[in-house]
Image (cartoon, rainbow, N blue to C red; front, side):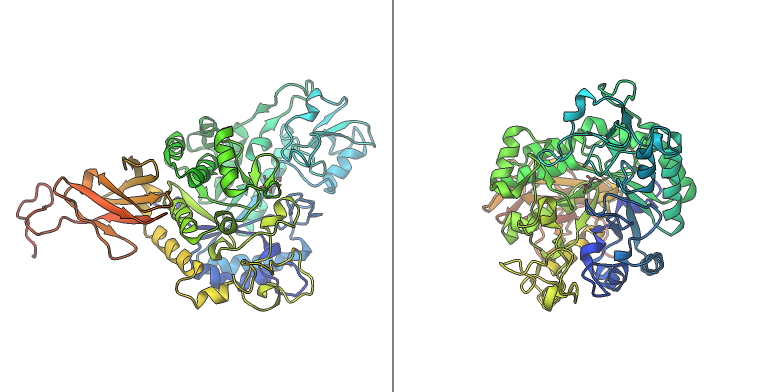
Length: 561
Ligand code: GLC
């Protein structure tokens, strides 16, 4: 396999300009601020930045309601600032991914304004209209409890328009070839400005095509459009990628990857939810099943593994018992829960102790795929449950101990900075953690380095090693001559496991983090001690030349040449 697929082994860092760094002191983060922080990201080990939407927007859904696809919202700077940022990111060899939000536009987009103006307007067919209110209008809301319907009557023409998300986010009509051509134009535009790919928002909804004659029917899924978008993307820019947001069942995923002709990377929501369940229950067996269920993927495709993102932690795919157990551990209060399925908390307060937090991160880095980190999680930032819905996890980055945590010099910031309790910016910030060898930041940087030095994970094949304990996840990766063994103890108490590892019956396991190599016992097993929530990263070493253990088939091999 050719090795030049950069996304197979990359550290992706996701951030929202709005809350990352404000350079001009108006309270909202901007491109200039982000540009000044590129050194920070580079030193952390970030390979690719994923930017949340920054285009002009009424900003009623954190920018996921775009009113102009071809610009930069003035709150974040100018197009010139964007190009400066791209230029300096490239200088450092960093890739830039941006959100592609084309399931819907803002209702303030000129296309929708025109569409709703009359039944025969130029853009009428760019959106999805029905003369009657479909019987399914009360179904399929993405934000239950907040969003009331998926079809809303528009006063001007008296017809109903379809919106999978909020009513100010009318769905574009993907069936219309003009719309698909426009999506390609958007892709082409940003590629020309230097982006390396797109995080494709809400993929299953982009490609669903309601039957306009029969809007009560189940929509058709037009997977072939994904292939059209990829063809166009790669024709324009050979190594650009699509990173898909699709929280779907494992058996559905092949349709999105399309044998390597569709989406390149997909967020592994299935494993994500089972991972949180495993952390809550200290039982890894359903997580192992989830890993097996998502094992197969085309050779050029990849999973994106993550812990948290800018939305709620969606647990909707777990069974009721699993979900309840996970809620009980990580989001017991109703104010922590959202949309009947998720938890609106940041990782650090949710998990509540450093050892298990490290475990969670270490597991995530060790899973088959490419890790995606969320800004602020590398320093263990907290959440603000006084804020509305998902805003709780979108507070400004905490840089130092100066007012507003160094994020902005403005009197008022776009979202309040966390300034009380154990997660206040005075306690949790980059500058402070820089000077503390034991900090979360230093730990995160080390783990990122370790992950980057472990290409077996992105390229290799993996198997589960029988650990004999329901709380211990032991995995082995193999790639070329190298082999990694990664062992995670999900239990809150120390454990010992004895592992029989095919290639290491007569070889040491070299500990990659601390000096604690393991030698096989006389039965060829590795007996490993694990701390409570302990994690160990090993690479299989060479046979030890002490007479007892030899390289297989190389008896008496010369020690020196
Ligand atoms: C995706 C985004 C979410 C947004 C929604 C509508 O799910 O992650 O933040 O609200 O799409 O665009």
